[in-house]
Every structure is written in structure tokens, then in C-alpha cells.
Image 1 (cartoon, rainbow, N blue to C red):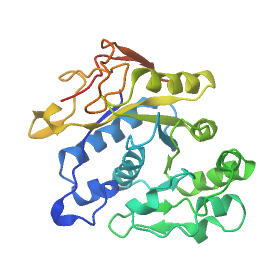
Image 2: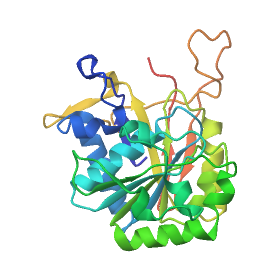
Image 3: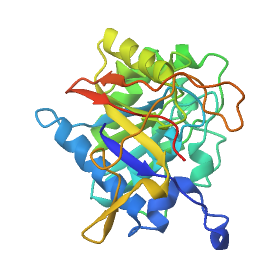
Image 4: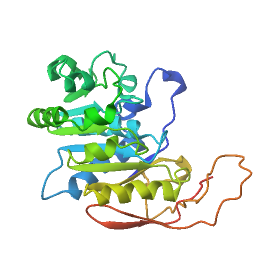
Length: 283
């Protein structure tokens, strides 16, 4: 595990604020601290070769990968790095929604040669050093576009201009993240303890390792707030204090199907082997 992120709650008094910019709106919150801890863990996970480009993905839909990507981009920019967040989920793009930006043109238009990087680059007024490239026109062939030589050239150009490149990719139910993983320095994999099934989570990680991708680690997202603990006045989500269990069956509420006995799920990454124990349904 490389990060534990608490469950985000929408402020009823600020209903227009997106959870994707939560750390910008709540810089002193426990969740913001958790994202800064994730940023630090990523930095230390690749000391010999500093990370410059990473892909954020997940095993399936609705696991919060886009929220993790956008908030991580914000804390990277806050640390002084010139950062760009790219929406490469050309199936269900979300980055433009989180930042309240138009999506008429973006990454797909650059890769197809219709626009230049400067044509699609956007800023976020509340955070210095942060730049945004939305998805743009949704293509009929996302995988082919992301695997193209022009996509590689686009990333090479961005490496010359930015200190950190964070790419929000489609979940690994499609091949997009695998394709992008060969073009970046590492992959961050998002799960939800108690919701993501062990087998569903494990197979994509094994596939990434099989093709030689560097998995930086797993981020446990949407940790319920009653699962945290306090240290020095701050709220942290600890792998040592809390143990979560994966169930082999769906943990949908009111399910009539009895779950299989809880089991441990072993995950491995490019820099260490680690075991996630007791990652099951939380109440």
C-alpha cells in the first residue's frame, strides 16, 4: 500500500465544489494530509530515478481514480512542481468536470494533429503551477490513439515542459492503462477496501507486472472516517492500526448471497512485495 485516502464528503454549504479539488478547498483537512503523504511516498518509492510521469488507474468503475488523480495533481503543484493533469480516459472523461472546464478540445485533438499542446492547455486559478489537459473530442478508437507514436511524442514534449505529469486513465477493464503504462515512469492503482473484490483487483496488477510495467503501489480509497486514528493532531489512515478484509463475493448492500470466507490478497509492485490482509467489507 502506498496511500490511504479517507472518504470525501460533499459540503452541503458548498454544493458546487467538486471532490476533485477537495484539497484545494480544504488544505488543512485530514484528507489533504493523506494526499501529501501519498505524494511523499511516491517520491521515496523512486529515489534513483525521480518520477515525472505516472498513470492513475483502477480495476473498475466508480473507485475514485479521477478524484485521486486530480487531488494528487493539486498537492504536487502546491509543492512547487510545475504539474499537468491529463485526462486520458477517453471513454468516460471526468477531469474537466472536477475543474469545471470546457471539454471541446483536449488530448485527443492534440494526438490527432488538430491542435497543439498550447491550444488545449488550461490553468486553474486557485493553484499556481497547475495545468490541465482535458480529454477533448471522444474518439471511436481510444486504445489505438493512446498507443500511437504521436501520443508518445506528445508525452515527450510534455516532459520537457513540466516537472510532473499525472495521467488519469480508464479502468483496467479495457487496455488503455496497460498501453499508457509503457510510456510513463509508473502506475498507481486505486481500490476501495470492502468494495473491490480481491480477484478483480489482483488480475490487473499481475497483468501490469507481466508486461513489465512499474506499479508504484496501491491506494486504498474512500476509507470510512470511523477507520482513522489521530496522531499529533492530524488524522491518518494507517495500515498498522486498521486491517481491512476483501470478500471474494460482492459486498453490495442487502445482498441475499452469503459472502465467501474472508481471505488475504497479495499484491506486488515494481519496488516491493507487500501483502494486503483482511481487506473486507467495512461497517
